Image (cartoon, rainbow, N blue to C red; front, side):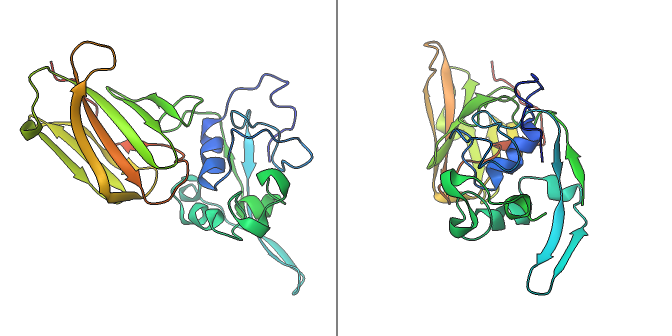
Length: 236
């Protein structure tokens, strides 16, 4: 739950809560009216202000409704329940019959089926208001439904033989000339066979860039690109 008038009150953008929304399969670029948006009218652009996230067990046939623990680990957009929500009937916007018109959830339990944690407006793994592109520590990234692209500035003399990229289904490690530029967990599942890297002229017009392309296993927006475990080093 979040306040319907959060945007009108100029409350801060809540990236963390929006990451959960996107992880469940909701398209935040589609305009929703408060009548069909159960947790507030934040899209497009995501949720503003504090958000209450809860989990319950709801069985209408057995006449059971009870709260169930919602843990810190459950607040991670890579949590298992987010994957379930994206599936048909799972409660997310890509969940077929579990959604109301326009991609909005039919109820709070339908959205997250998730006891209480407040997702404050702190920044996520890749801070910013856009899920289409952004900047990390020493790199830029962009994504569409089919792939993720990361670009690292490298020296003009960098050759492919100096580059080592470990592509995992959910992890990525990028090393250039023995220095690790990025190492962490990804925001979605990678199609390893559809992933590669190239060395190109920089978009800025000067220098070179290492371009790492990750093919997506599923055609959906990742709630974040990567949760880095190491600082980025720029090769000069």
